[in-house]
Amino acid sequence: MPGYLSSYTDEVSKFIDIGTTHAYSNNAMRYIHCPCHDCKSEKVYVDGSIIRDHLVMHAFTKGYTIWTYHGEQTSGC
Image 1: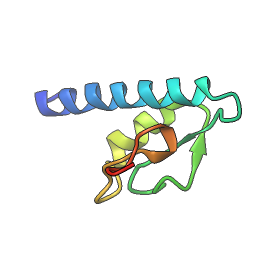
Image 2: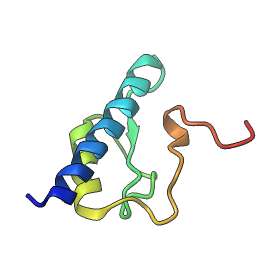
Image 3: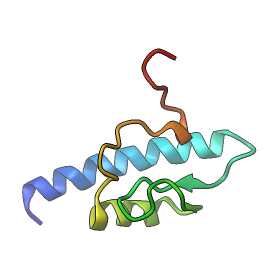
Image 4: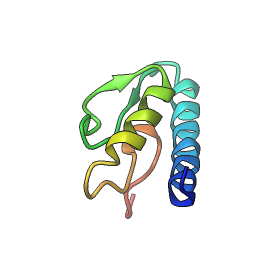
């Protein structure tokens, strides 16, 4: 695996870990919104490894910067 891809997948894994932790700390939410280019945060999954695979294969939605579904705040909030 090229170094740049390894670095990207490592960061994606960290990203998924944070989203999964947030989803499971909130009793009402067990699903994780997938921010990949194909899903556009409209599809949800229970298994973070599916989202990890999506992000590696399809990348993030263009212009995506804040994962508001899983605890990130927009600036000014």
